[in-house]
Length: 200
Image (cartoon, rainbow, N blue to C red; front, side):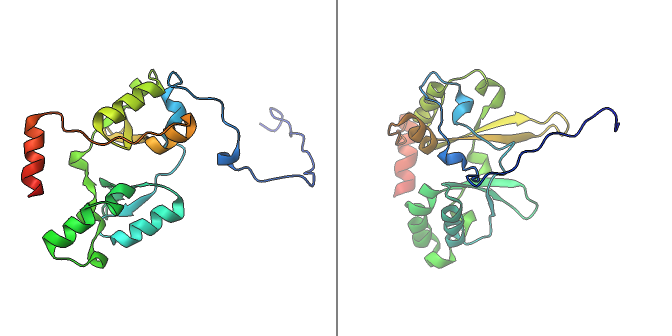
């Protein structure tokens, strides 16, 4: 093996040597026809930031701020995915509703009280994402009235689905230089009736 490879040439580091900052690097122009994966956070190369379902909501907020993100993956004590928590969940009406309905102090609210449980989540197929454009992602997020979308692929070794990507309107907005703020619009009378019954 020693004869198969040769040592590589090295270069001295000049005084003008900087650490790389990915966010500061110039990015090529993006438009709705660009490949969807160009705006996807690839969780196959970047570890997702998670928090335990039993953590306090205030700790979740601190974690979001410290990492500069607006979404946390929620796990149980077995490190299994049990839900998602977004900045909108933390800063919106859900904590107030929890205080009112469960008679908790805000400081007592747990992530599990506010998160969107896994059973209420859906995702995009990663294989389809490889043949989709940014415009498709925008249309999907607008249709769902959401700020985030997950991408999944099946692990052939385990037979389990794995979350491998994350799309967010904040990333797409920044890259396209436009505002994307979708508000969920009920699609059917039954959905409106359900919302009214649970609001009163």
